[in-house]
Length: 407
Image (cartoon, rainbow, N blue to C red):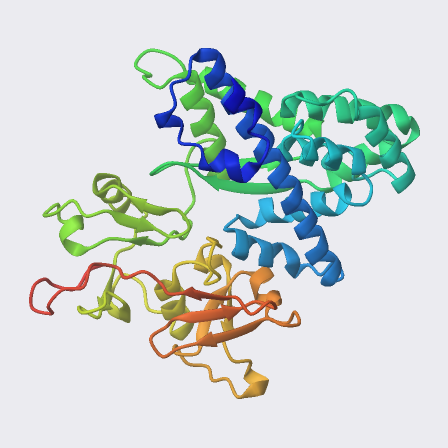
């Protein structure tokens, strides 16, 4: 236990070789607790660093994207961290001090920042003082409930305004899960509409149960919800464009190489064949460079005519080209890597797909974009950090004579 009592320095803690130490159950738990406390202290340092960056950038919107790139985070989490960092270092000093003491995790501290975001600076500091003795060593859900209760207590008249602002923040999000699955969610929707929508889905799902129905009720609810979104009737679906990349030999069942669904990632060959075999699927030939696997041309051998250059670039890029952003190319803007007014040209060697937010990022001070002839996009951040983006090849490099071009 003497060793455990000395583990207050994160550097010492990180150097401990747990496998080489004979620990009983109590010591194992104590070591895990010491590690968590050390992580909390380091997270406090990270919040202060992000707050400093945000102040240097005068609160520019691009700070969240810069943090996402440099810390390898998704944009939404990076934005929440930057907002929390600003609040913790200005309005919530006691909450940040709990992190310094190793008594509150960073994720829990973000719950306090979120619960107090609508309060005035004075009221936020009052909530911060009320929570100081209540949230130490509590889990995130307990912290969230305590922070919301304190905020409502400090500003009861503002509860209605806060609820209205929350409802104004409603949005639809998609989250990619494991291979072949994803989730769609309406966040912060009006509670009465969400409840009514769920009841309709529940009613129609239960109506489908009967003789011969093998799907569970959970599966029926999910199927009904998706059918309603796509067709409006809980039944037939309308066509929607999804890019699926699959080698011809995989499509024919001659190999089991994984395919790629734009925005999601790789999926198993069997699932790709199932999707490609759907009645609404449109197949087309894509000509690739056998040595690199990169797209060279969209073949004309397809069921619908090509839309030209814009379609070629979207098929080639598959997703937004900023590293870490996975918005499908068909939902992105087609943009010149070199601005048109600065000599850019409308050719496939100078066009890239960028989502609307990353398109606007180019206009922020200090951000530069450079597109090499091989398609590599280099983004340089205001601090001089370089991040490269190259569409992955559609297949492994191979001699041109080995196989026919993929779909």
